[in-house]
Length: 313
Image 1 (cartoon, rainbow, N blue to C red):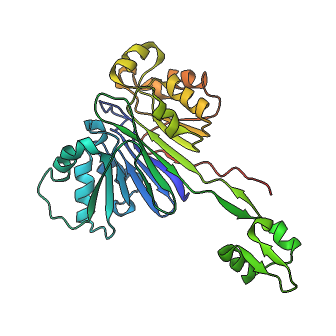
Image 2: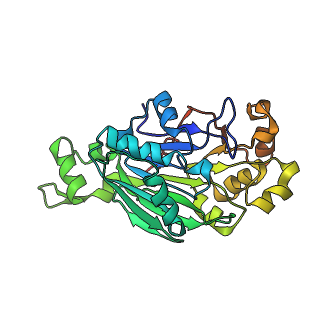
Image 3: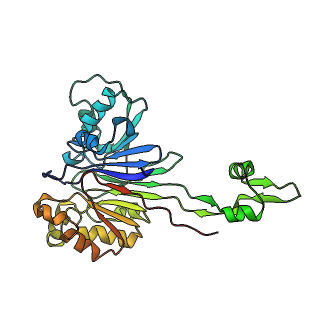
């Protein structure tokens, strides 16, 4: 199993279909499990995808329309049933605090899990060490936000350069920890001399919104962008009216933002199931705007975060 992958739990928009559950996305990022927008039925989809309640370390809600949050009560109650030992922060737009409270206590249950409500506002950022999370306000009919994950830049040891300086074994660990190594002959070797820059990976999650500056800021140079593509071009006017994107608009965002892998999801039921297949209009309209890696999301699909682009010394 990849240490960094997206597990897609649901891909429908307002109305689920026979083949598409309401939204739900689990991002596995090393030891973290970030659950985005658990719509109705998410707990069942988790079982189908092999995702345990204990795999979730953080929940992020973009807005409080039902297809993005009605699965939250079941997920929270399952955490208590399974006695998840770690605290689970839940992020959501600050103006929706009352909705979160109602969902958290939607029915009677014995609460054992530690759920920590942590509302967000536009520009909110938290540094978790392994990565930072940022929220940006989007344009929708209710208060909504998108999320961005950025791993810090670091350096990659180049074995050939280590060999050039005759460094091996425990000395390599000393060099990595301290950034320098006394070679014992009056020379000091620095980490920069035997390493190359390694750009931190980036992930962006953009749901219900019209086009706005925040969409591009969230998507900027993302290795993996998950973005709604509710409508096709023929319904662009309706999309703008109700605060949604077309497949072409989502692909344009990917192109202009330098995205490596684009995941389109949140498809409207109005187009019929056949339109969601790889030869359908969603892919065709997206491909006209973006010639990179495009994935049309399907329920229970797994999508890897693309491997790092190698940077030579």
